[in-house]
Amino acid sequence: MAGVPVAPPAFDPVHSAFASDAVGSRRRLRGWLLRSRSSGGILFFVLRDRTGTLQVTAKRDRLGAEAFAAAERVQVEGAVQVEGTVAADARAPGGRELRADRIDVVHSGEAFPIFADQTEEFLLDKRHLAIRSQEHVAIFRVKATLLRALREFLAAEDVLEMTPPVLTGNPAEGGSEAFQIDYFGRPGYLSQTAQLYLEALLVPNERVYALTPSFRAEKSRTPRHLTEYLHLEIELAWCDLNDLLSFIERMVASAAHTVARERAAELTQLGRPPEELLALTPPFPRITYRAAIERLRAQGLPVELGSDLGTAEERALTLEERAPIFVTHFPTRLKAFYMLRSPGDPETVEAADLLAPEGYGEIVGASARETDIGLLIERLRETGADPATYEWYLDLRRHGSVPHAGFGLGVERLLRWILRREHIRDTTPFPRTPSRHTP
Ligand code: ATP
Ligand code: MG
Image 1 (cartoon, helix red, strand yellow):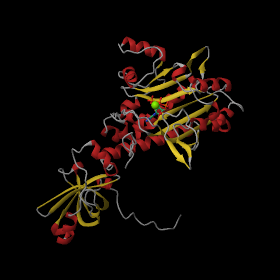
Image 2 (cartoon, rainbow, N blue to C red):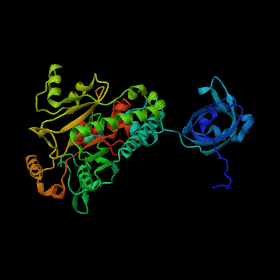
Image 3 (cartoon, rainbow, N blue to C red):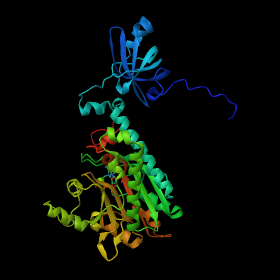
Image 4 (cartoon, rainbow, N blue to C red):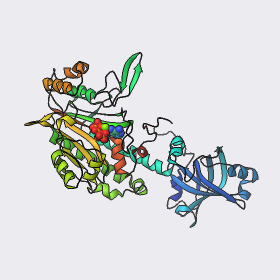
């Protein structure tokens, strides 16, 4: 609004001390203490806020004995406000420091329990504090940008975000991996996938997606399974497998490029050169399941036609790759009941998994969906399910059933590869695994 005076911001961001004209100017900063030491009446500490870190020095003579003593008592991760003059100093990290003439202690805090060389288990117990580390900060900034990049791509493609439930009355894909809960005395389940709901929302909207948690009661302790993960699921009407795969590769490349451009510093800090992501260009290589099995057998792996691709097989297929690859046309009996049987070959389905390179393995599961109600019921029976429990879903094939296809992408799986993390738990602030659901 014109004419309304705007008060100058009371505090400056820490990174403002590194501006080219900052030396000699005054700053008021606030944040948390990364580390400190005091000797001979001079206190050195590193101050952190969301924009960066800066060395601060304070002299007892300048602050006064009482204020100096209070500042000395501030623990690692204590909170302070400081005022002073920016100086150039070659010994300070980044070549700048703030010479403080005032320090206000906001919260001096207790001794911070996290320091170097602690066990992974201890750090997971203290996860609520461990996530303040520079490494975690960088990871979750990349994740935030990745989520925004995915949503921006989908908005540009005119795909509408939907909000399906995560509490359900039936497990979507059989009971073994579903968490059961007590729903007022009746069984309820935590959603393993939003797909069936998205298929219902598809008809009026044609292009829909959801970004919701999925829950899998997988007891296997692998570096790529969480029991709760963020699932990006998409359904597109009038779409076949070929169209779908080109959509997926454009989405993955676009999101990787955005992250590389906007989070180059964090990627570099975390060991992924951004140029590697910028080099990703669609189309991604495609091989059939049959060709994949032949390739693995030629490498000496003990696999048979008809067996599923596990961690070891996906690793062997992608170890030497630099871009993701699609494995297509899996055997029908390995895949879910709703996948479309290939025209001319009912033994395979119009399905594909996208495998991340460098050994990381599956990040997307995709397929064209079966539209014929008779075939759906037949496949449900074959998998031992009772078609009656899918009654509402079968209704979708009774009213305006059209060709459509969709996929699910595990956000933490994608991020694990982008950031080259050994374990998927690093990609989520509060990981849920078989042995842990706290803090
Ligand atoms: P996997 O064989 O690796 O267990 P899946 O075949 O069970 O995967 P889908 O049911 O196709 O996976 O789920 C779609 C996507 O969700 C997967 O491609 C993957 O990216 C992600 N995903 C599946 N299970 C998990 C999990 N337990 N933790 C994290 N992400 C997962
Ligand atoms: Mg699984």
